[in-house]
Structure formats: C-alpha cells, structure tokens
Image 1 (cartoon, rainbow, N blue to C red):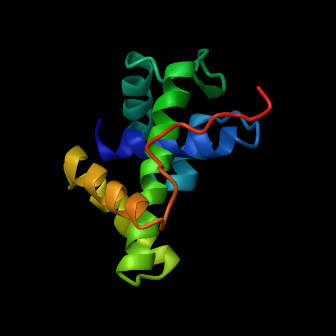
Image 2 (image 1 turned 180 degrees about the horizontal axis):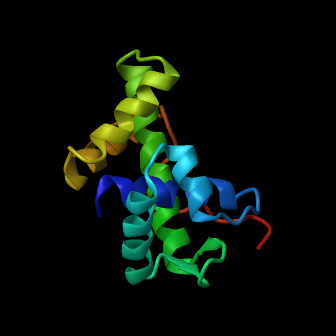
Length: 135
C-alpha cells in the first residue's frame, strides 16, 4: 500500500481509539491532503476491505482494517523506539523519520530492527498483537 492510504488508515485507527468516526474532509484537514487525494486513498482502502463508508457518511475501520492498522501502529512504535533510544533522535523527529522509513525499508529490515530491540529488552515485541487480559 502507498504512503497516503497508510497515513489515512493510521489516522482513522488512532481516532477510532477515542470512538470517533470521521468524515473525509476532517481527514484531509488533519493530514493536509487535498480532497481528491483523500478520495483516491479512501477508494483504495475500501476496495482492500479496510474501511467502510456509506455515501456521504462517516468512515470506520472494518475488522481487517483494524488488524492492519494495529500492526502498522506497533511497527511504527518499534521504529520510533529504535530511532529515539538507539539513534538519539527527538520523539518528533523519530516519529517523522519512522513514517518515511516504513516506506523505504523492506519488511525484513524492519523485522530485524524490531528483533534487535526486543533482544536487548528495549521494547516489547511490537509485532505480536497484544491480548486483552480481561477476555
């Protein structure tokens, strides 16, 4: 998936944690994207089965979309930890760099970075889905 749809999926995920449903206009404003960019990305996300939206309605994640977004979020957190703790970047710079790196590094390179951080107890295994202890 390309960077813009992934950014949109990530924003929908983060805001859905607060039980917020979104309109495409608010996503565009939050990310500084044009309406056509948001529309194209949402169409791709819908076609992939990650989001659903009634015509002119609010946008929400499907179960498949939530799973994808959670994995992306865990990997992003791992890269941010690596860049801040191992490289010494500020949290903001680490986050921005992680977003870029996620689209440049191969999945195996990201996995190796995460493995290294887990091995040295710098982070939890972010690639593993957390289980709810109350379930």
